[in-house]
Length: 351
Image 1 (cartoon, rainbow, N blue to C red):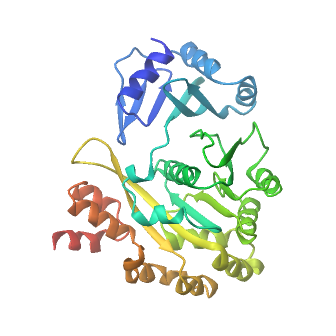
Image 2 (cartoon, rainbow, N blue to C red):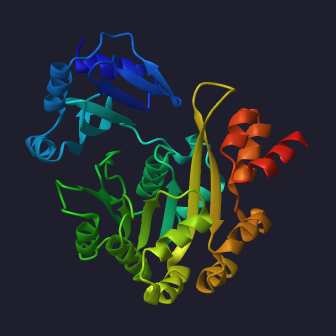
Image 3 (cartoon, rainbow, N blue to C red):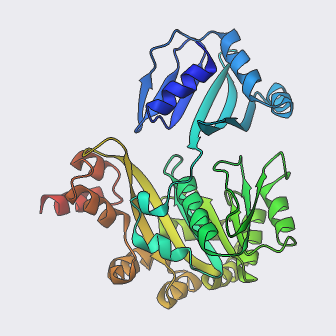
């Protein structure tokens, strides 16, 4: 049993994640379900050997110091992997997220048509949010790829680690990896602004400095794409504002109202009509009314604005879930379990 055999079998099974844990056989996640593979139980020396095969010397040094390390690994002709190595019960454990080498076209992701329109924006801040594993990276990669086919611009991505790899088509694309090419997102973003970019992808707005720089970059005429681990549009706006000290929150509300263009919040579902996954998507577009709500600290009214502006492409999470259910793509149980307002949605599905 070799690492290559495991990865090839996982790829053929369309697994999204692979877990290599001593004392267990390899386990894969296929359409959100954890499934043991038909291989022998892994031993501590085997998982250590697999780690040393995949990780660079720098990543191994970090692991030896911190007992955790994040890095990327590529198998030519197969896929790239986002890998976390960690210690558990005294042995190396590996969690691997598969990133297929070819960026899927936006049209193949079952996303609302309005997402494609966002790739035509000249400037501003676009946020793609959702839980871990909700498809944020894939959506952003597909948006970058669409712009790469259309524009002659300079795109810089700041990632942890680099996931999809892009080939410069019409655009010039540079990809910088945390740890290898820059010490932090904030540092990479600060220097990216001096590298003549048109479009900047920030892997995650995970701290105040990165968030402030991303908003400043959007203010100065760049299109900035980034992610947050939030589940809906109003929570996303509040999360950004809450990063700032109380004395600065009015100022940041004004800046965010001026720069934010859209929030796309994704939740993935297992399909029941065929193998695979499909996203339910909440979409907030920043109209003048939305900008006023952000400026005046009335973000609790954002859900109402989304519901009354469906004609221009806005959509609430629950209406997106209901559409998937009525199209026969997801089960009623899954729909209600992941709804923002389960009781209200259940009544709607019965009706």
